[in-house]
Length: 187
Image (cartoon, rainbow, N blue to C red; front, side):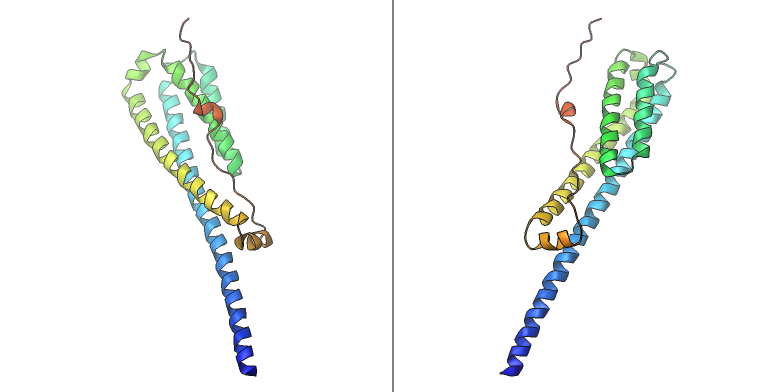
C-alpha cells in the first residue's frame, strides 16, 4: 500500500513535469516560428526596397523635376534600413508604401518612363515581390495570432507569464492603404 502511494505520487509528479516541459517547449517553438516568419518579411521588404531604389535610379534622369518624391522615397528607404524593432520596420514600410504610391501617380505624367524596358522589368519584379511579401506577412500574422492566443489561454498563459513573454505585434496594413485613393488628374 505504501509503495502504491509512492508510485502514484511519482506518476503525478511525472505528469506535471511533462505538462510543464511540453507547454514551455510549445511556447518557445511558437516564438521561434514568429522569428522565422519575421525574417522572411524583412527579406521581402528589403528586396522591395532595393527594387524601388533601382526603379528610382532608372527614372531619375527622366524625372528631373520630381526631386521631392525621389527624396521622400530615399528617406523612407533609409528609415526602413535603420529600423531596429518590428514595429519600427512596419512603420517604415508603411511610409515607403505611401511614398511609392505617390511616385506611381507622378509616373503617370511620364509616358516615356512607362514605356522604358527597364522600368517595365523592375515593376514586374516589384509586383512579384509584393505577392511574396503579402504571403510572408500573412504567414507572420498567422504565427503571431497563434502565439498571442497561447499567451492568453490556460495553462500556457501561466508559463508565458513566468517566462516574460509578451504579445507580438501584427503587421497590419494601415487604414489609409486599405482605402482606394481618389486622385484628381485635372490640371
